[in-house]
Image (cartoon, rainbow, N blue to C red; front, side, top):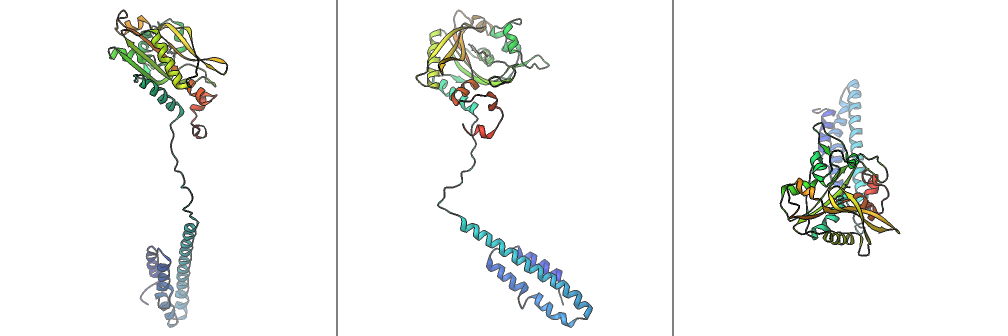
Length: 323
Ligand code: DAH
């Protein structure tokens, strides 16, 4: 006998790798278990051996035979199940939709709002989230001892900077960097020392707007905001301009929209305060401007019918999938 059972087993394992069809499996079966296979010949030759060796070899060849039969059986099963799977395939059914990503409702709202202002000739600009006191307070006419600073005091870094509490900071940066005429909006994150509840979050998004030129009046502000809010909430929307105080605008207003039989505050605005122009080196006698700031979450909640601000940040796919 010029081969051992383990040599045949090795050979069989090798050849099994290239068995890919029922025909190939049958050829494999004939080669390894057929009448003229090495195994059959080896079994034939067993009778020429002595009793001891015959018993020993016989057991080994029976193991090999079992191994070959098992391999063929499991291969056959795998062919059958893929054929059954192919038979189950119904090409008339609609395809399975691939999982598509979606844009989160906050950036969705930001790009919708930005789109409206872009049509009005506003450019989208950006500013840092970690700011100096100059940009967050001083240049915006909020002095050190001003009470409104308390509700704006956020996390400070060890070098005295802080997480910005309003996107109004970007007004200052843009005016420092450029000359009028200016028409910009600045979307971004802001931070507040607020207790988190259904309508408050320590972080949310604002969009700041600024227009500066030689002649920009309060009626320009009203016109732009009317256009914007009608575009956003529909042509029927009713607005109310209510006198208010902001350090960086004079006069200042809060703008409400009519909502569910009541009035809902939607943004703050006003004419740029002369102190703000002075802080950036603009001449308040030659220039005029208006500014406004709105909360993105508030608008998204109104338009999408969401009652809890925390839902925006929890990353629950069941919530996010709806928008
Ligand atoms: N920065 C204000 C805030 O965070 C919002 C604001 C109000 C911005 C009036 C303005 C403005 O530009 O004119 O509450």
